[in-house]
Amino acid sequence: MANPDEARAWRAVGRLNLAGRGFCTATLVAPDLIATAAHCLRHPVSGSALAPERLHFLLGHDRGRHAAHRRGRAALSPPGASGRAEDVAVVVLDAAVDEAPPLALGPLSAATSPLALTVGYGVDRPEALSIQHGCRILARRGALMRIGCAAPPGSSGAPLIARGAAGPFLAGVIVARGPDGHALAVAAEALAPLIARARAMEAGR
Picture 1 (cartoon, rainbow, N blue to C red):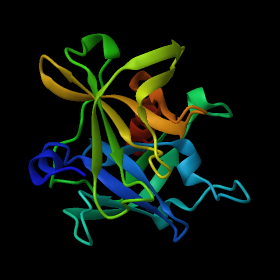
Picture 2 (cartoon, helix red, strand yellow):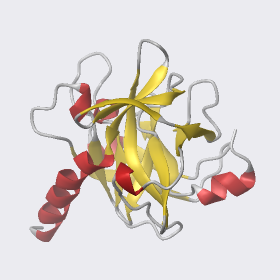
Picture 3 (cartoon, rainbow, N blue to C red):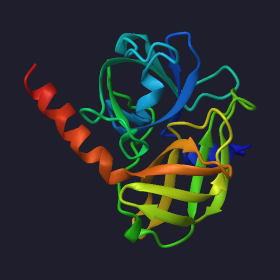
């Protein structure tokens, strides 16, 4: 489990409650945008999209307390997404979050040390943030990566965090647990078109 200092360091991370149907992890990437896994935003049985307003982002959730609570207003994922390499989404929040700075996106090439996988709110510890350090990329095909850290059930949407010269940044989003138990992640650059779509949508309101 993350100690209090670690939890403060990764305070852009929060729990995303899914219309009373469980939860995932999400990361603040702009004051009014969070990044998560696209499959988290669909009904687990029917596959239909959950209503954005029924998505609740609890920033820094820790044992019943959180720094901020926002609802979704819109959700965007890659058009026609079907594979794991496209299993990312951006949720537009109903109001900006001022309680924590967003985590910037960055390329893995900018990493200056091994990655930190913020496991987030797994089913074994749903009330507190868990963190793994020293993760490395074991394999990569396009945007999809296999990471040398475990992905316990419930870690979907958790951020893959790297450190660069300017500080920590979001390098990817955890989307699944591989057959060997290692995390599968989609590189953060896959989020850029979704963020651009979100901004265009907001400009047209």
